[in-house]
Length: 212
Length: 160
Length: 215
Image (cartoon, rainbow over all chains, first blue to last red; front, side, top):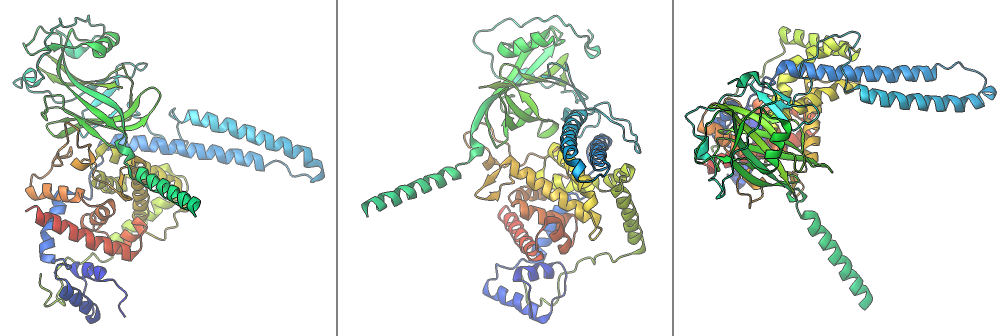
């Protein structure tokens, strides 16, 4: 007995699966009732082909090395955090066993100490996560730009804040120059009626790229 | 009977108004206005009759950050709303595709708005940023590509 | 379409049978997974290198945004690392990984709140997701930032795919692009086989209709 829906049968048939006579009858019946219901494999074939021209199943991750380094750094931090939690749990459970009667006061103290230690550990490991740490088994060198400000397909692109304190100016290097023959002034909006003198700023930062 | 009728109709009215409110798209709430500008920064004496010097918050930021150029000209500006749940586009170069910015808000904070910004040239995305905070009165500036004797700066200002 | 002789299905390449080479790869992967489960970061590093391209491709094909795909690929692998102790080797590691990536993308989409009438609206750059009164709207034909074959059909395909729902787009990508079988797709997307088949049917139908209308 057929337990597959007509849609499933249609898809399987399109994909080259041999259907049994009962299943074929279902499709024939659906087609007879509504010819527009079915999908013509011959019409769909160019669609499937076009999908492959536009989409890829194995793209390379942009900045693959940075991706790998950044990810493994986070994984190493995660592992270290897990190990610290495990060590704390061991300390709490490894308290020597004594008779129940003599432990009444000790249980309270141990519980408070465990909570206190756990709180300290969580707080310190929370802030430690932002600092690079080295795992014992796996050593790698962190990339110079640990937290990229910008992403780009262009491997030669780099970005950094002009000032760490005021992170509102981002210097990007490696962009392709705009050809000189393109007149950006002509593309700009018309000047306002009242013209002011352009501001003059004395350069304070030495930029090797812009030596006169 | 009369009381129950009033009660039922009030409840129904309340229910329908709740449904209507729930169907309103919260993503289209405007949470600010972004101004995107393209600035030409140069140390040369190059100018043009179309050149407009920068002013306002942008001028103050340039002075405050001690950017290393002598002259700054405003090449183009565009203003668009910041929608809570949707990305939007800025086309400062008189609507052309020469340089465009797309942005997407991530969070509103007391300081400003956190956005991710992408810079496009001729319909190609050149770079995208991580989530950055734009504060009113403190423009976000990117030093962009080189052009002639200077650099193009891409500036985002939050106007609220 | 002719269904006069449906006993003759259209010709397709047969799926690759299990080969000694595939078995060896699978065995090596099992070794890496086991080592990673025991805390070996080098082993996990190798697993990431083996699978990052495919995970990134799947996410990028769904979102069309490099920065987001980069971030979500990272998140997926972080989640995979955390969930590694629970992986029991009953399914292929790649299937398990894809499921994590699928859930990561869906969670992210929900948080973005780009929804309409209870169905996810995945048309991030389509005109109707921007306020109509906005002075500028991105054209849906804006190409992503990678080199594409400049074919007219490829552009039309992209436009048509953007009009599919997230669920429909995903089954098309997993089946037509990545070549997974139906059961694998069901496992990756946490759906029943029937749901996957139904979505595949309607996704193909919609794509065909959209492309026919655009001619």
